[in-house]
Image (cartoon, rainbow, N blue to C red):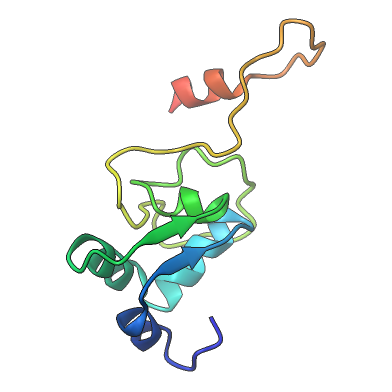
Length: 113
């Protein structure tokens, strides 16, 4: 992310790692810097390894519709890089029957999607 030309940096990369943070902000930045298509091309066509952590995992999927994050900014679309044809929730936990939390579980939230 320190390269003055991020697209060129992706074109030259031997591997791509995207870390965590707010998924909405990360996806917006990827759109703003025109990186989605180039990252997808490098991984799918060129076989460049990709690893994501937290939000970096979210943006590698079909969309960010199942993220736990709050929308602090709005990307032009929730469609993500699309390295896999499904969504991942990297912080998913099964419901705890002993927990007194009365809100929805991640399983319920994902089922709503």
